[in-house]
Length: 445
Image (cartoon, rainbow, N blue to C red; front, side, top):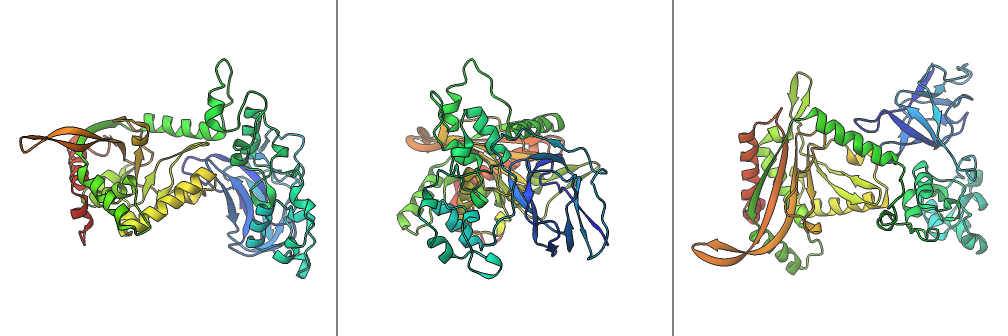
């Protein structure tokens, strides 16, 4: 029996991706669940696992590393021993080749080594291809790495003959020779963050902020990530009826609660956003329509409260999702958000880390912003924007006293939620943020 290997959809709006490389060789026996090839989607690269088992057959017309492939494209086959297979993938959607710099060498199969050994090799700057393995079938051990000649670690990783398509595009934009940069990706592959952290030519610098200061009078190619972001924002604007409500709350108790976490010295100090995400999840339990999704002739209300967290990175805006927030303790939310933020800024988020969100929280308070109009993260119904917390004079029981004030901006899809229900939800969120300790002590929501 022959099974077709096709390009999956890694994101809700993904129509095409970049084929990075095969993780198995032609003729290898593949078991269901084993990593088969690597695909770069809208915002992240991911190992694609085999759905079926069999012997891998890669036809001559299969995509090459760096090729753009359409979702649903047939790129290979899994067959039983002795079974004949098609010699091409002509039935698949068109496959186009993107520009690849001349230094890129053909991708070879990675030498056998455990993940821990691969991490050690990256830290040492050693190419596994240059290490002789002493284990079965040439498998490389940590001992083999440690006994490799020191010269390997100081090799200019001219070093890198492999890079991700995104890294090549950024290198071209910044005027950097990516082949001279030590890669931190799998088997020394140069990733986007490696390029951005490297020195640039003459009057340019590698990091995104400095690059922005040198764009006057020039043009910047639209990156794949920026194009994806633009498409999603345009889709949201054209396919929702957005309305924004803004309110001002007394955040004094919220500030006090966080100070208590700091004073406790427990080691895990939730951020304001972590606390607010938990309280928003509790409010959504009372107003589930705010996490509904429009689907043709019906409105779907998800069973779990998965909340997205907008993160600013050098690659652009990313929205990792904290799963099932209502069931998590506040410290667990803090640890998970810190993990996802770090992965986002390192460019290591998987597509699965950014899926299944039902509501998004975005915070611009650290930039001194008081209020703004956030854009709905489709296919969600609403998004909450957080402004900065400011110490200001306020009237309390006919007395003028200093209080911490904060603005909340809720954008919602009027197709699904009317103004009054949305206002009641924002009112509930406001009450929760003004009395956070009482809400967090609730045993049921």
